[in-house]
Length: 92
Image (cartoon, rainbow, N blue to C red; front, top):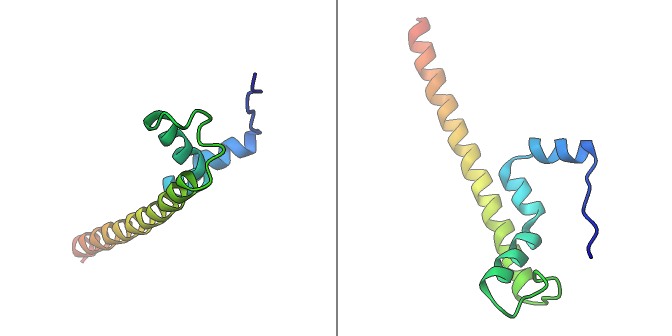
């Protein structure tokens, strides 16, 4: 039987404060393994021993998580610029 994974308080706080894109990049191999475990009957060990599919899927997950992170920052900058424009009109 597998031992449960316990994380320290600082590791849990780090995961809670990390943006979703960074968390997805960090756990991409586990996410890819879980995906193949549930969708492909050949993967019975959560993709643990996969040499091709899981690493390729993990790389793709990291790539798209990075793109999503960049898009979210761009949207946040756009919203900030819009709100600064609206506030400057009110303050004049």
